Image (tube, rainbow, N blue to C red):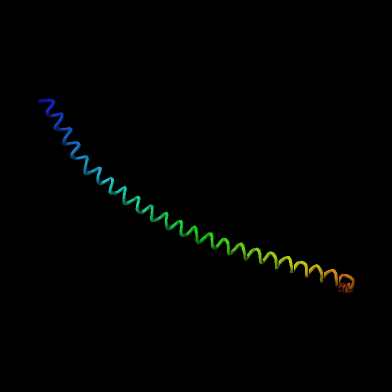
Length: 94
């Protein structure tokens, strides 16, 4: 009789664990779907960030070029005017 009770208990335990396992599988599937959606969203954002980075890099390069041009102009203007020094006025103390 002990064997019958053991087998009966085992059968009941297996029968009760099957719905729990199915529930866990359903929950896991839902989590997987949510994670897949999140990954797709992050990949889309990553693509947009990549595009923004390219635009900013191009803008930075253009500004660097313009900055170098302006520095050259300033240097040319300084060397042009260095021969003509204006006498500075001294302050008189009273």
